[in-house]
Image 1 (cartoon, rainbow, N blue to C red):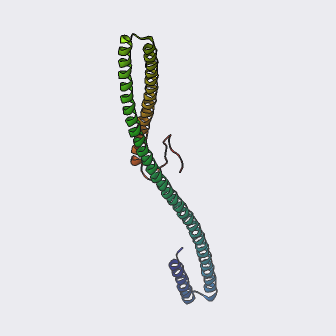
Image 2: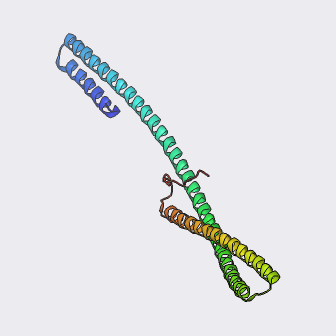
Image 3: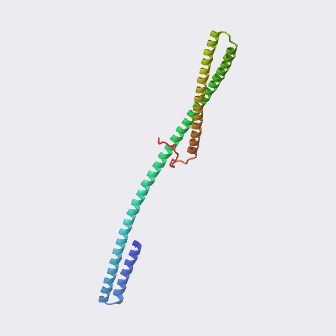
Length: 203
């Protein structure tokens, strides 16, 4: 009950008591006055209880509001931290992508060099085979055979190196594709959302 309503009830009780004194006998007026007094006390007690309940409700609401405010602050801080981590992860992925592209360029250059070396070795083997066919002297034949074997060994080494370079190039290209996909996903990911990538590493 509001304080204004309490005051109105008390005034009504007072005016009622005055009216009773004016129009009724003294005993009846006392009885009525006692009745109004009791009603006023009851109203006052109820108002006090309502005020205490309102104070308790306000305290509970304040506690809940404080708790909600603290939780909101914690959530905001976590969202900011997640955003910072996501940005750092994206930058690292971009750096890894650049490094992988550089490695792929080096591997492609090495593969080109090895292709040239293999072609030169093939040409040398062909030359030696032609010379071997025309040789008549036994010592020259042995030397030519040794040179051919050496050329064939060089060719095999060049072929092995080329295979290794091609494998490295394929691995580098696969890594580039993986990093480009990760970079695209990170750019599309809203800030502050959990990272569900299988390649996610906490920074």
